Length: 395
Image 1 (cartoon, rainbow, N blue to C red):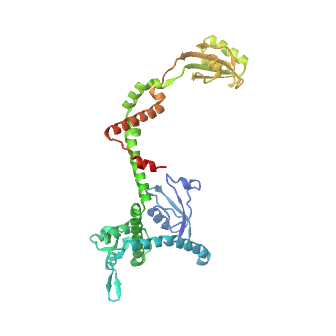
Image 2 (image 1 turned 60 degrees about the horizontal axis):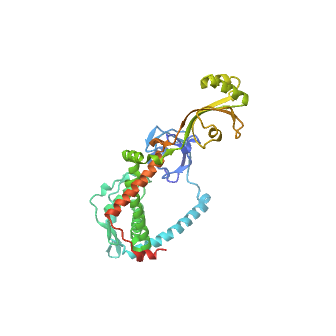
Image 3 (image 1 turned 30 degrees about the vertical axis):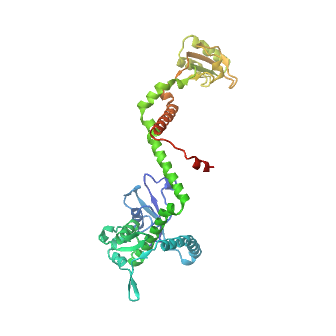
């Protein structure tokens, strides 16, 4: 399997939503482009177009792979321009990073533990680690345990030393399946990546020491996270979990959560005045809503519709105009041109809402109550002193 070989496959899993519109077919991909090594292994093992794999699993689910096509490496002349652009782009992006790494090495006395023997310079600690690599590395299965006991220092950066074991762990974490090659060449490149990453990490960890403004910003960020966590623990989550406290708060404050005056009303919406008169007569004869509907809607389902709703005063004009218990006269609603009869079962005075009817706003008020209690307890325990001179500097 060549690294640059591309293969198109169809993938079928319980979660293949991205490819479902194309019947499961994936775009062309090469080695190292899929998130699962096992998926690549099974795909590239198919010998000819149309071959199907056996069902297999990865962390993404079950798969069956069908080889749809295969491409070899394009001729150099056909991709020369594209390669030049990529190289130029990579060079530009790497120049700034390389300069930064060189500066970090200089500022932090970067030293490799190489030994001079005559005119030659040897890197015995590195070479010794190479002897612990075997064919499992090409399969992406090499384990740092195979270098257990190798603790010679490879390089020093600032006040920290990095050993063979540190690098072995790095190799294990970054390995992938690859074509067999010279261990020295591949691991030398990995070593440079390891050194570079340690340089960048050192610089990032030193930012707060080098730049006071950054340090202040990071402190503000940490304080913000701490405040958020404390507030969540003492207020938000507590208000959600403390059901007993919420009920007690509601009972003590339920007069703050009142329903306005309400009416339990059944609305008979009629298509015209004649139908409305017929409906009113049937209501007078104590007919049920089903019986009324069966009679009136024999010719058309549009003749009559019935709904029973608890209305708040001020919610609808024709209901406000007939705000009393009993059956109203036929009234026309000018907003829709329909004729209505209102049967008001009961008028409810202002009354507290049940906890479940206003739980959102009650919970929010309970959170505010808990926050005030918490802040009050903090003020009792800790004296607040304002530095007025510093306060004057804030604009």
